Length: 206
Ligand code: SF4
Image 1 (cartoon, helix red, strand yellow):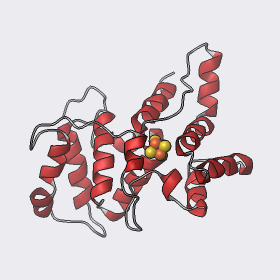
Image 2 (tube, rainbow, N blue to C red):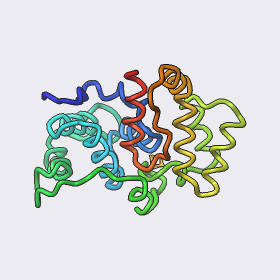
Image 3 (cartoon, rainbow, N blue to C red):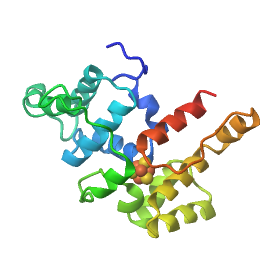
Image 4 (cartoon, rainbow, N blue to C red):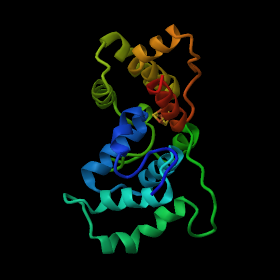
């Protein structure tokens, strides 16, 4: 499928590092379980729509993930019967043809928190300190002081500030190089997962 964003079912894994932690977790959960429960499917599918994965590529992506060999995997027949409609629905291709918008952080935080086998929500709110610390180290945050600051912000309920700080820490070198070139760098607070993604892509491209 032609796609102006250049993002498709095949290359999407190259863009995971541009995603905020909430979406990285959903991508990981999906890959591990070949499935995501309702809340996660909604949160991730609308985000992917926002980064420019078109309806055709999105369907291909979910189909591949749900039917890939491994634990939790399902047959193509079951996928088509039980899930196809829902993914098309997210793109407004079924039902009332409503154009659903990707969720901002506030919307994500207003939904029920995930239970143990779910991956949706905001990890700065939903993960325990130890698990969040582990996830942040996987993103490359190894400085104890900085890591501690992010964990403290999360514990105080300042999830978006924590997320904004993580963006800055993860992208420090790229931000510095942009500033040196005299380019504008948006340093406002993260309020939307797609804003995080776009900001990261901007840095990649300069
Ligand atoms: Fe995602 Fe927003 Fe939470 Fe960041 S603050 S992880 S973008 S929900």
